[in-house]
Amino acid sequence: MTCNFSRRQFLVYGSATFATSLLLKACSSNQTQTPTATSGDAGFKIAIALPGVITDQAWNQSGYEGVNLAKQQLNAEVAYVEQVAQADQTEVLTDFARKGYNLVFAHGGQFDAAIEQVAPQFPKTFFVGVNGNLQGENIASLRIDHLQGSYLCGIIGASVTKSNKLAYIAGQEFPATQDELRGFELGAKSVKPNIQIVSTFTGDWNDVAKAKEATLALISADVDVIYQWLDSASAAVLQTASDKNIYAFGNTKDQLDVAPQAVLTSAVKRLDIAISYLAELVKNQQITGQIYKIGLERPDILTLGKFGVAANEKIQQNALQVKQEIIDKKITFENCQDAGKTTRCVKKATA
Image (cartoon, rainbow, N blue to C red):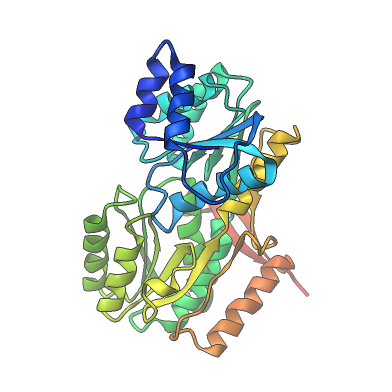
């Protein structure tokens, strides 16, 4: 069974004294209509809190697909809440734990503070922050190694730019987006050391108007390649790039089809597979309180998408060769100090 609660509906049920009967009634009347829906195993329940909508063709959809993959593979009962505002995060996570969910995914690094507040109160529930930076007795974080994927995109971007000015757009600034920005910068500078990388954070992953405005502002400042990480607003960046005859990168999903003339490739992150993998660890009581970082060594989870027309054969082969060198650990990324900040730097193996 997959239960879909609107934020308002969920919070009302959470505060009612007869919460259990209402919750069951809600599940019965609001279950997702999919051909593969099953009643699930009442002994293992998974929930996910999502900051956006499950139809965004990006981050939130991948999280939703993850718990549904876990439902199929583990015969679990799953539930989700969409469009969880920052102010409601603590209450949504608390209500899932009170209702006996064994595993709660918080889908975004912006949930870290809420997890840190709620998890100690519910030691029988395991919390996983996707893109988080926390670890504890009943807390783990799932981190795709965004830096590895963006490093490859930086190489590609530097190979096609004419203005030597690239940009990164994301919804919020936190460790995962900082990592991705750093990788994009390192990759680009490995090709052109004096290339310029600028960044902007719109403050909203789904606001189409803000995304378009930010894209146009960057283009007016001579940026001709944009790496974006947004949710529902990602298409606005890609389509604006196409309209203005510049290049861009897809993210999370393979987004070449959104703007075929503009998209060079995509940093494809199969969060559905990663989420199901961690869910299996929890069910088998094999999970520990740590940060699980998954990189290019798992091509079923992190890889490059289809290449666009502007990424010629030479550019493709170079990117794929570097990808293999990262997998083979001939190129690694180690903690370092740069401009007074702790970050990651490239280290190449000596012959």
